[in-house]
Image 1 (cartoon, rainbow, N blue to C red):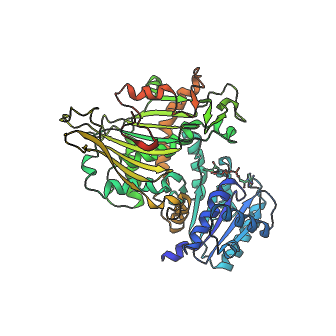
Image 2 (cartoon, rainbow, N blue to C red):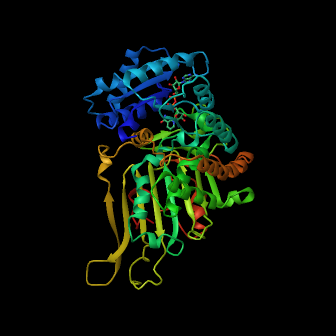
Image 3 (cartoon, helix red, strand yellow):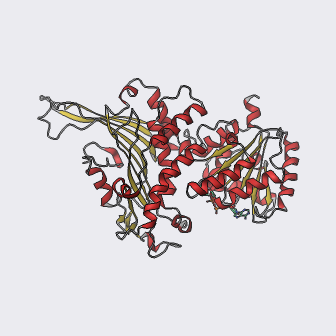
Length: 500
Ligand code: NAD
């Protein structure tokens, strides 16, 4: 099969009138189309409940692409590949019509029977859609069939297992593409390249030279209109179980013997297996939680989490998590990986800071402040790049050391060269490359780690909630978590070595 064959496919998007489809999927597909990465032989069936004609649907595609992208010269040609099927996914009778439509388009566009089913819908429907796709014959194709499934993948290990069993009746593991859109981000993919393509880092990438690693993913936004979902999720399930643990796995894994899906996944799985389980009374020693109070963001007063729509007035849901992870293997024994994530924080930022151990002795004692440690900072969003913090001679007659920074800013920062995560992930899926999607083993191990923490938190009401003001970097207990070990969170904005 050549590469073009891989890109010939019928893409069925379930939830085609939803937010994700409009904001991310249609613009990303358009970008692929514009770059000729989509074969001319493709068609999309949008599936959702609302009755719409094909014309109305194509009009909505054009609008969503125009909202996201400035230059859309080929939009009419692109939109002509889109078809709509009004369908309640819980209504068994409606799948037969969908099957006929799919076969007609398969013939018309010569799609070789290749099908991608993208579930951009609420997770409670995932299992039953997969079962119907099989029982109603939509997966009986002569080409490939792939299932792309959005997060959340389950609510805990048990529900994730149940969902996995359901989708596995219709799709094999290698046909399932579980989206973790962080894995599509340029700089998350860059973690591997920085580590494995540079001779200067890998020899130092272990407990002998690294004192700690900090991963922060902070948001300024609150829960917005997602209160109903968030009340049942919280930051631990929404962010830690997937995105943060995936970043930790990429930072900590051994070099894979080859850069292919199986080898990379197997190294990531080993990291997750080596994660020290934190349970029972240990949870409060290693993890802290927070919930945002009112506060000021960009000069405006914003409400507390408990005042948000669809949120209980005495909610025990965490909007902030910080934790200390330990990876019990030869490379990482004793090195804390600190993670934190939260809503309504002071900055929107995803950053990784690798702090190296101090030099054995400070010869520059006359320097006004102690020598700063060397840091490697990987900026994931909103800016993309890498910074190395070093010490160098302060200009002048003396021999004082002063901190300096070597900066690399990814030129794609203006959004022209940096493809959206979804664009890359859709492209990977069409080519059959599942490297940047999560394997079931990773999902299961991550849930089994976070379940032990949620078990404790859900059974203990946190009386201190709300415990951080909106517009700050989280509760005091988060700083204390590091202070106990003699560290502090490196500030994420303008990560200046002199900031603390
Ligand atoms: P949404 O509520 O905006 O859209 C849901 C879609 O499902 C709509 O098209 C609706 O018509 C359709 N739908 C609902 N019930 C249906 C039924 N019975 N039959 C047929 N269609 C039905 O949701 P969203 O924000 O687009 O999110 C979709 C999925 O993507 C969720 O799993 C969500 O967690 C995940 N996700 C969304 C985002 C985002 O940015 N929106 C980001 C990450 C993950």
